[in-house]
Every structure is written in structure tokens, then in C-alpha cells.
Image 1 (cartoon, rainbow, N blue to C red):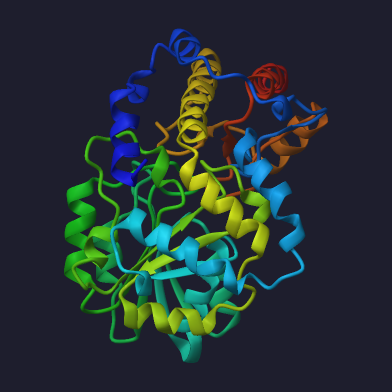
Image 2 (cartoon, one colour):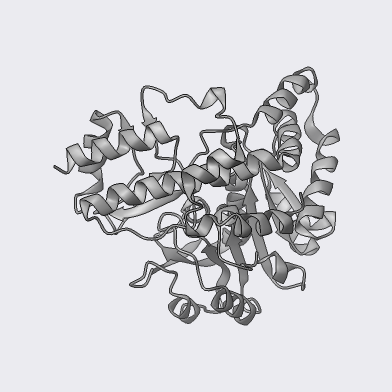
Length: 369
């Protein structure tokens, strides 16, 4: 299934309105994967997909083990071609990385050296920012607005002659918020002549807003943008470490020079099969919406403020310091997200299997009394 067709399915399935969750799942008649059985600890702290890898991907990994003695360079071109077709660009736009985190760090290395300045929201995903700071970059962290959104106007005001990169995580981690598509596109098109804009789209597949564009659309226009995507989330391949960047060929060439670890043969073959496995893609999205619905019910029952999420996690206001809450939940065998300053009385909870979400609900009700 082509990328645009997958996006169309996500909308027509009605996931954004709840999907009549139980009936919808039964109607689709997908069997629960054997390997998704709940463990002793509900691991809801890292935004992982507990249902992956899919059965088809698992078989490919097993069948590829004999090739694990070979370097991945021979297998890589086929994946690059598949990604290029998916994104609607030529292959010289694609940089495959060891998870999107390596792409983020390679970008931080490329644009953060020699005191380069980076502008980003606060809080947001820190991998690029922290890495760039170790290389001597200065990061302008701009507080999110009252709706937990990127304050694009304030970010634009921070741009100086030293600004080399503007980082946007959309949907944002940890808030789960999604920028207005027109405001985002206008912002990128108005500032990319002053600095490279980096659009982290790790959670793009979970967006249910109609006709929401990837910023790859601007890359295709030759703009100064870099887009990162990953196989860690909806595809369930977080442990295999594979992702990619999409950028204009001259920018992609500079980024390739900064990539260090690369990825591996098993991950490459797994990613190829993941792109073909439309049933698991749909299954993951459906299960994610169901889990979010249960989380919302728990938070509503407790009267806890939370943000509508466009990701596979929910950010909510617990009213309790996250370090204390995290420790208390850990005592109940439930792991939740780390601190995200300055919102120390907020917590991030990943979607997981339904037994894990039920365990979370029981633990939170007990811990918060």
C-alpha cells in the first residue's frame, strides 16, 4: 500500500472519532499476536509498539540470519528505493540511519559545530539538542504556549545571523500536540531562507487529521528542510534501530557524511517487509486508538487534565511531581515517562497492550487515591 493510501485508510476507518473500538476491531478480525502477552511489568515509558515486529517481519528476520555475516551495503539500495517511492522523491533524497535518533544526532553534528545556534520548542525531544550542545552548539529553547503547542511566532523572533537550524517535532514529544497544518507550512516556507528547518515526524503515522501533509512536500519543492521518519513506532522495530531522513540531495549528501553507526542487514530486510505489511500497519494504528481511548477514560474518571494526543502516548497533569509519581507507579509494576521540565507535575504514558493499560489505570487510581 502506498503512503497516501495508508493515510486515506486511517481517515476512512474512523479512528479519529473512536472507531466504535470493540466492534471495529472484531469486524477487522485480526488475531492478537502471540508475542504481545503482558509481562510482569507494564512498560509504558518509551512510546514503543508492543505488538511488533509483525509475524511477517519476524519470518523475514529469521530467514535473513544467514546474511548477518555480511555488511549491509548490498541490501541497502533496495530499501532506499522503497522509501523513495513511498515518499515520492528520488533516491538521492534519502539517508538511512540507525533509528531516527542517529539522523537527529547527525544533523546536530552537521549544523551545531563551531557554535552554530539551534532553535527548538521546550519541552520537546532532546536527542539532537543535547548532542549538538556537547559539540559546542547553543540551543534556544522556546517555551510552548498555553495550549502546549510550539510557539512558532516566538521561535521566529529568536532567529539571528548565527541560527543554523530550527527543530520542530510534530506531533510533539512529550505533549502529543499537532501544529495547524497551514501555520506549520507557512512558518517553514517563511524561515527556511534564514536557517534549515528540521521536521521530526516520528509520530506522523498516528495523525488522523484530514489531509495533514508531511513536510516532505516542501522538500520536493527544493526548500531548505530535513524530515526524519522512523520504523520504531507504528512498525514496531524500535529494537532494530532503523529510520531515515528526507532532504534535498545536496543537504542529504552533507548529512550522510555525518552518519556514524548506520544500520544492519537484519533491520534493512525487516524494514522492507514492514513497508509491505499493510495488515500490521492497520492493526497497530487501531490498537493504538483503542489504548488511547482507555487511557482517556481513566484520566476522565480521575478528573485529570490531559491533551488530545496525535501520537502513541498521552500527556496528562497528575498534580504530583513526576519523580515521586514515577517511583510510586514503579512500585505497582508500571513504568511511565521520565521528567519533562518544566512540567514536573505532568506525566507521559505510552499506549501499550490492553492488559498493560488496565494495570496502569488500577495503579494510578491507587497511587492518587
